[in-house]
Every structure is written in structure tokens, then in C-alpha cells.
Image (tube, rainbow, N blue to C red; front, side):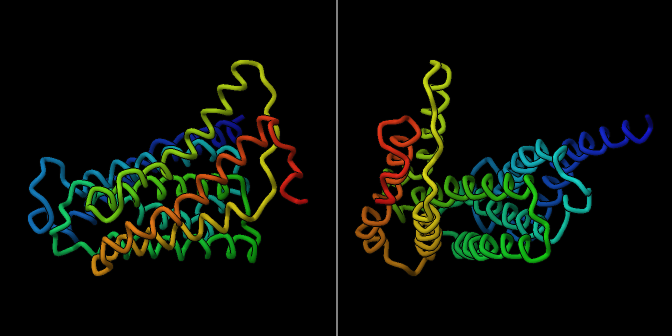
Length: 255
């Protein structure tokens, strides 16, 4: 009985403690590395924004802790790399309250770009050392989605990308919302197409967003290229919804 109770309390403690400790640690770190007076005069400190976003990511991740066995996989090498990526994206989030004129305008590009590199690394490490878990998959998807929200938001606020580029941030939520709506109405929902195209386009998006955050890249060039980069990704979300809603056969794209 004691052992079962301990197994139950451990994930509960992590679900509460991990976001709190993580948020405080990241807030203090960002506040120390990037003083507010060097960045912004807004009422919200960038470090506080980063901490809140990091807490939210950790809370979401903690919801999947019950499925992780053995416990060493929770903070194994692969998941630790993924968590570091989420922390870097949270730092990028802090820059939504920072003007483009800051001397630290290079930080979002470095943090997001490093996160992109780690995105390719964590999966390789997990497969190599046998640390593939549902939690790792959940973390990877959550941080990918968060990155696709916060990176274009900073780029748009800084005038690096047009406001309509934020549609890439909304696309996944619209897709998931459409699926939920169909289920609520009792309509069938099929399986998503098994295609590498979405992963390939996601990689292109990550690279482009990293470039968009680099201060020395001309904004005019980014605005010119943006439609060609955005359109295929939005088209894939439309394709996937047409397939899962039964409007297109799942094997149509294999013909």
C-alpha cells in the first residue's frame, strides 16, 4: 500500500513542484542575464514572461508523468534535452515585451535556433539509448507547437514578418478544433495521413523563423519570401483535415 501511495504522490509532486521550481529558476536566470533596463520599459519584466511560459509548458508536460516507467526516464538525457529546448523557447517568449531597438535583439534568434538544433538531437538520442516514452513524444509536440506560436509572434511584433504569418501559429489549433467539433457532433474522424511532408515543412518553418529573428536580415526580403514559405504548411493542414474528415481518401497522396 505504501509503495502504491508513493507511486501516486511522486507524479503529483512533480506536476506541482516542477512548474514552480522551473519558473522561479528561469525567471531569476533571465533577470540576471538580461537586465530589464537594457531591454524594455514596459510594465511586464521579460523574465516574468519567460517564467510564466516555462511554468505553463512544465505543467502541461507533467500531465503525462503517470505514463513514464521507469522513473529515470522522466529526467533522462533525451527528455532533458527536450526540456532545455522548451526553456529556450520560453526565453524567446520574454521578448514579446521587448522593443526591437534593444541591444539584445540577437537573443531570440540564438535561443530559437539552438532549440531547433536540439529538436533534431533529442529524438536521435532517445532512439539511440532506448529512452523513447509517451512523455517524450508529448514534450516534443508541446514545445514544437509553443515554438511555432512564440517565434512568429516576436517576429511580427518586431516588424520582421507580416501579421498574417501568425496563421501558422493558429493552424494547428484550428485543425484540432475542427476535429473536436466533428466528434462533438458525432461525425467520424479518420487517421491523419502518414506522410513525411508535414515534418519536412515544419523543419523549413523552423529554419525560416530562425532567419526571421536574425536582426541583420533585411525585413523586406523576409516579407517577400514569407508567402512562399507559409502557403505549403497551411496547405498541409487543409489536406490533413480533408483526409480525417473523409473528404479525401487517406491513400490519395500515395498515388
